[in-house]
Image 1 (cartoon, rainbow, N blue to C red):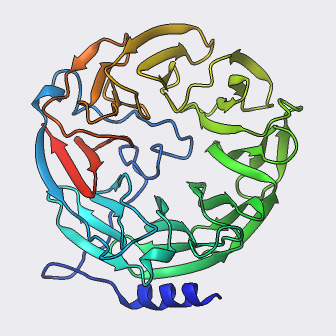
Image 2 (tube, helix red, strand yellow):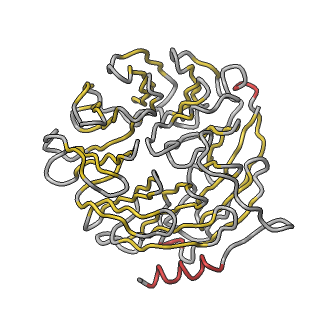
Length: 394
């Protein structure tokens, strides 16, 4: 283990800060449908919460700031930054410039926090919640050409480190499904590696691919050498299920999402947006626009395209509506019949009716999100504004 990893593991094993009298109660069940357990909501990376009903077109204008908290900041330069939060079973998890912490969803009270020993050497993490653990993937910042990484698994209730794995490549991407945590990244090598969530045991490695989304036990990956292809592998074993023919001689792009039902997969590459059947990799439709990022609820695809948000039929690719906003748009999020997007240059949040693209709210009563995306879960809307985590509720 490199010196950085030894220092991080030693500090993380002892640096739990538990706040509040009476200790910390056992964690409730995780992975409920309402929980936003990883970036993109779930393993399919739909950016769609189908369980949200409290915040909708009738209540969105009544949202008020419920609490805000400023996580710890580094005193000197740091390689890490404050992330968009995860929300699961009454807790909110966010990484900051100095480490990672858990906060009460109702009050914003800090429950625990881990401080990186060397914040200037650990990148902004990728995170997911599964099996009562907060899984955190980081990349080292001590080298440009040969960068490694780490995965840490913390108990969600106490913050104690349960297991750690060092990686030969950075953990630029992290995803969890079927009790398996998958990470991928690139430095002087590129690949996908899978570990068992419960104990960190390495399960399999796939070289030359980058992970994108998972559904129904299948992980969808894209090639990164020579030509662009998409493949599906078993997330538990790494067994190859199908591989597309060559799609492009450029390796730019990758898998972005699957539908909530997991029957379709979407990828963006140099020739546009591609829709595939998850069962066999056959092409359903193509669209020439390379606009990205996107969200999907299974009926429509919503994507940011310059200063517009546009909706396409999820199964046909047919353009359904386009709404122009006052600045460049960010990653769309779909919840409670609404579609949310950041608008550049500090403009009010874009809040649209998902069905037809009409404006549902001016968003002027909410904070200005210049980049990133909101998280809508359990009747609350969360956003990270600079270094501050903010929660809104009706």
